[in-house]
Image (cartoon, rainbow, N blue to C red; front, side):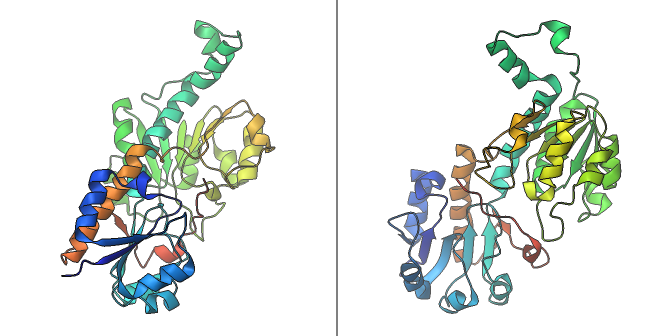
Length: 340
C-alpha cells in the first residue's frame, strides 16, 4: 500500500529541532514526508501536495480554499505552540479534520522558569550577583533587607490552564496558600488541585507572589491595567510568563517605576523588544527574552508527540499526546506568532 503523505512546513521550527533521528525514522517508516528545501515552502509547492496530503506539520494558513484542495486531510499539527487565527477552524470541525497543538510541551519548562523567577525576585539572586561583579556586594543582612521566603507565602495564580496546573505541584514543597482566578473553570476543578478559587481582586490584593499565566483571548487583552495593579500589595513579587498582551504593558512599566513591587517577565508586547523601552532601565524587574519554554527537551518532545498521534490517527484511533482545538475556545484565542 502507498504510504500516507505528510507535508512538513514547520517554520519557525525546523526538522532538526523537533525530530531526533530516531523519531524521524519512526515517522518516515509509516509516511511519505515532503518538505521545503528552504525555511518555507512556496504557496505553489505547498498547494501542489494538498490533493494527496493526509497530514500537515506546521502553521501554514489553511483557508477553506486550501481545505477544498485537500480531500484526504485528517490532521494539522501545529508545532509552534499557539492556535493562530490563520485556519478556518469551523471548516475543519465540519470535515472532522483535527487541529492539534504542541503547547503541552512548554508547560513544565515555563512553570519551572516561573518558580525560578519567583525565588530570584524574593531573594535578589540576580541583583546581588550583579553588585558582586561590580565590587559592590552586600554581606548577610545588608543584602537581605527585602528578602522573603516563598515557604508558607500566599500565592495567587491568574489563569489555571496548562501553565497553572504545571506550576501547582512545584509549589507543593513550599506549603503555599494558593488562590486561583480563572473564570473559565468551575470551583471544583480549582479545589481538586489544592487551591482556593478567588476573585481577581482578591488574588491581587492578598498575594505575596502573583503568577500571571493566562492565555490571551480576544476578550481579555490588557485586562490587567491601572486599577488592577493598584491592588497589588507593597513588596509583592509579580511573575509574567504567559503573554504580554494580557497586561497593559505601559501601565505595568509605570507601576514598576514607583518601586512599590518587583516583577519578572519573559514576554513582551513585541519581540524582539524595542531597545529604548524604559522597563529596561528599572532596577526592580528581571527581564528574560521569551526563553522560558523553548528548551531542547521541549522541542524534541514535539516531534515525539507528532509521531505518536499520527500513528494513532492512521490506525483510526484518537490522538492522545497533543492538545486538540476546541470549538468553544479556539476562535476566541488571539496569540501572535513568536519571532526568533
